[in-house]
Length: 101
Image (cartoon, rainbow, N blue to C red; front, side, top):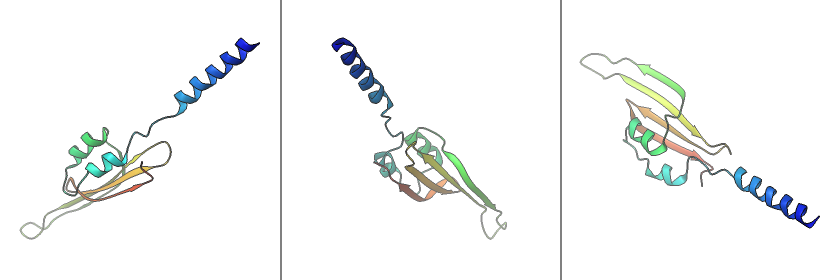
């Protein structure tokens, strides 16, 4: 009987250790992101493309203004913590995070 109890406790400890997932996106990664960095550099730091949340394109007027392409991306952890980045013409212009460790 003692062997069964020890085996049961050992099995449970393996299950709970395996279920404790680490966050894919961390505060350390977030702090490496700075305004002006390219979207490609952000992908390299975060290890994935992120999820496109919103996108807008404003055509420029030749000789007066350039076109502006704005895109917002999100990188989410399973626990709900996330990184949210906004790019204009593929350069980071705004960043925010929620619940990162």
